[in-house]
Image (tube, rainbow, N blue to C red; front, side, top):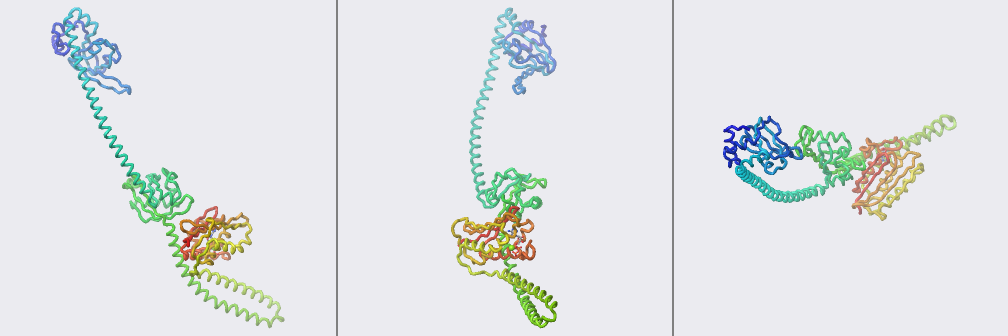
Length: 537
Ligand SMILES: Nc1ncnc2c1ncn2[C@@H]1O[C@H](COP(=O)(O)OP(=O)(O)OP(=O)(O)O)[C@@H](O)[C@H]1O
Ligand SMILES: [Mg+2]
């Protein structure tokens, strides 16, 4: 190629050509070729055969590699009066990278073959050029080496730093898991029910207190809807609304549902772990802490019932007293009328007959009223009886015997007594009053079993947790959910008036609480179980 003086001067300033004279460069360029490239045009590709170097006259060249993940790794850029591709020129190996023109670029290309021809003509110049080229490449290699060493040292430092970080991380992980365990133990040793739910009402935490109170395993509910834990799902919706509007709740009474469908009345506190966002999002979660107050509620209820019974007892005694006197007068007047009518026996036989029928009705009604009075008085006079140390098993046996009369018309029913503990269970109590309790419960059980059904009633006696327990279980019709809350109310009965006055259970409750006992009921479609428990003597 024909080279201008300026180009020759410029090339002369380039390191590897600096050992040549301008004339020698001019000669050398005679063996070179001139090439022009457009923007983004490839000059050579990786793995192309090399054996030539390039001098950039004008423009810009990018040297790059395409990595295995198809990303581009840019190695370097060359611009005016810079040389690239000299490695392949020297070792004749394939290209180790790609070269692309970044703009309109003009290059001088010098191939090894052409240089060979130059070497034969100018061996001295070729030797100097080679020496210079090797020195230049050596310098470049040292630079690269330093860069890699730096990377290795940096890598090692990083490794040490990372190891240190890792150790610290490990340590904080241990500490974190220790405090997590501590917290977990605190949460689990609480006798309270602790449940955490997320925005979708799914359970995130279900502590041991909840497992015990509701008779579920945490795994039954983790990541599942909490709604099923509530006796009434509508009440759950209201709870959520209340939390959102009030941000936190305390002493909130709500009914939970145990695994056996038992109603567990709880006093609940609720708070969100982060502020309520968007009026429905609980952020990190909604915490529900609940305490089982079922027994407390039953006791309160019993106390209320007792007060009612005392009041009722007084009222009934007065009413009965007021009825008794006029009733005696009715009876006596009827007797005297009957005597007086004796005189008409012969003359008015038809009248006599009719009057006898009416007298019979009067007798029957008076007797019925007297019976009601006796029963009501009996029910109403729940005064504390004399207590002695008694075996509740004997009380149960006697009650079953007494209930035998009620069973006469119910041959479809079997009534069994079972001792759970196998040994006597002593309590301080009044035997006849406790018999009255069990007879009432057994009578209810008998009345709950329809005719023609294979009825089973079991009275079981046992002891656990320092309490004597007597249960009366039947496979009768069960107690309707709507009736359940009223059954201990005096005069609440679902039976026809000739069968029930609705006083049986209120009497039972009054007697049981006079014995420091509790009466509980579970009922469903399969039947009913009443459990009465007392402190052991
Ligand atoms: N074992 C049971 N099975 C089904 N329902 C029952 C049972 N025990 C009680 N009940 C329900 O509870 C109500 C109240 O019972 P309670 O013993 O107080 O009154 P009663 O049996 O109706 O009348 P009384 O006992 O005064 O003759 C009953 O009417 C019945 O609806
Ligand atoms: Mg009854």
